[in-house]
Length: 315
Picture 1 (cartoon, rainbow, N blue to C red):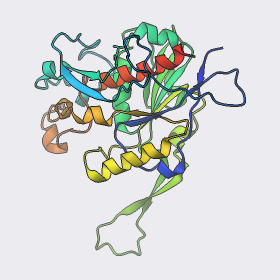
Picture 2 (cartoon, rainbow, N blue to C red; picture 1 turned 90 degrees about the horizontal axis):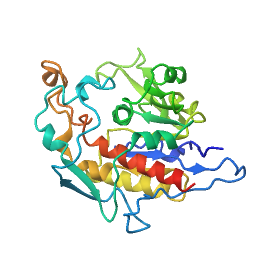
Picture 3 (cartoon, helix red, strand yellow; picture 1 turned 45 degrees about the vertical axis):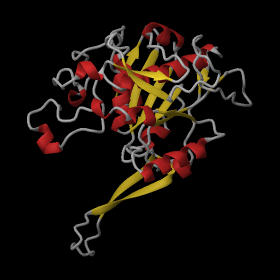
């Protein structure tokens, strides 16, 4: 029987902590093991890796003018207009996509869509979180969309967007959950003074998972969470939170896809003022949170896919 990847609920102590590019995904176990989970280390299987402790998240960006062009262009149907930097004529897209992430003592392979979908046959991948994980889902999908795919099936799981690949029976979908914890808007009581301008508050139950994702965990074989983009790791308090989350997850079955460090170097690769609509930047401001397509998340996809394939191939 195919390997199954179970989804693990994030424990209450960290569910409300906000962290950019620290994604969580669960570990593989065999269906033949009914009593215990077999936790796997997610290590690259490339023969060129010189160390069994290879860390794909540590390395450097290298300018490589021979780097292959992206698999997709501005015509891709998964594009959200504001992220479509090619269509929006963002400056320096050629240079932006000439930077290559080179892990220290590792080889990061470019995704092979056919190989990946073949190994993922009869499995499903879910992304849960705010718009940054939607950003990730879009990049993940565009690598695969030019293969045979169809829309619609993912809607039955109440996902915001996604794609289904019938030849492989693989679904990739995104479930929007602004917070991973349950929250509810509570309007201000009419008897309270209006002098402070407060209209209400959000009640956040940090020990209760959000309805948007807790009911779909059994359906997905891989679940990728991001826990918010209010904390981007660039200040002292944010880095302390990041460190605490890493410590809290040690010894658990939750695996970290820590993309913060490598992404912090690429302030050049945001949509910025090139948002696709006239006066958009003056109305909403620059977008320095999400990422251009194509761009840095292409590297996120390569890393995620390499980790998943390594685990599948090693059983």
